[in-house]
Structures are given as structure tokens and as C-alpha cells.
Image 1 (cartoon, rainbow, N blue to C red):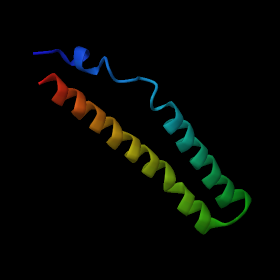
Image 2: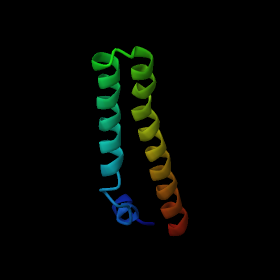
Image 3: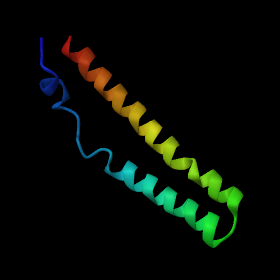
Length: 73
């Protein structure tokens, strides 16, 4: 049986970098639309993007971990 450190060695730690940057950019864009442009509906719509981006990234990360665990068995 492998330890959790051995199982996660194959996972890239920096894979969330672009995802986090995209999420931060989406928040900034939402704030821009909401406060600067005064388009509250568009600002609220764009404000949901970071949650979706992070959820998709988490899903793909979990799938990668699941594949590593399946390969270990």
C-alpha cells in the first residue's frame, strides 16, 4: 500500500495557477461592470464565473487523482 505522498507525487502543484488568475480576473471584470460601467446585471453574471471556473478545475483535479489511485491498485 502506498502512502498519500507517493500517490500525489505525480500531480502538478502549479496546475491551479492559471485557474486562480482567471478567477481573479473574472472578479475584477465583474466589479468593473458593476461599479464602473453601472451594468449591474452583467456584473452579477460575470461574478458567477469564478465559482464555475474553480469548480471545473476542482473536478478535473479530482479526476486526475482518481486515475492515479486506480493506477496504483
